[in-house]
Amino acid sequence: MPRPKEFNPDDAVEKAMQVFWHKGYESTSMEDLLGAMDLNRGSLYDTFGDKRQLFLKVVDRYCTTVVGSKFALLDQPGPALPALRGFIHGMLEGALADPQRRGCLIANTVMELGPHEKEIAGTLRQTLKMLEDAFFRVLDRAKQQGELNSQKDSRALARFLTTMMQGTIVMIKSGAAAETVRQTTETALSILD
Image (spheres, rainbow, N blue to C red):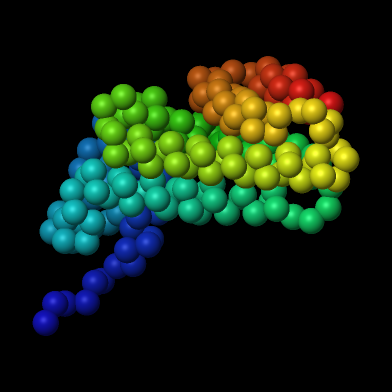
């Protein structure tokens, strides 16, 4: 009979997520993970597999808890465009408020691993598609409610906003001034007027 785990696997994945988010995949060592997760090698390997398998669990957790949970803000009843603007401003202000300027784990990982890690790149494409689809739904709702010109292409706008969000988060990670980020965001959002 296996011994019960003496740690909470969800807490361990959360701790690993913080390390990967701060350091990136390649720069994170097993020692970094073991120290942050307060585990020995055997427990880590028995529960999560190797570093790559743990990272896939981290990406899944990030997509579910950090990104996915915020999508609900776009589905709130009421005016659609203020909800969309609030969502974008909230995400970017949150990234600006991070003293470590970690950026977005999705964007960071796409740039680091996307070209040579097809499975991880596929997962990240799905997450970016979820963001695009969430934008599409709120833009379509804005059209139905008369907030957005019916001639505007909701899918093209959703792709544009997804690209703008990821690009702006890369600017934040690179150390761009908050005012520059805010000005870029407002210029991009003016496409909705």
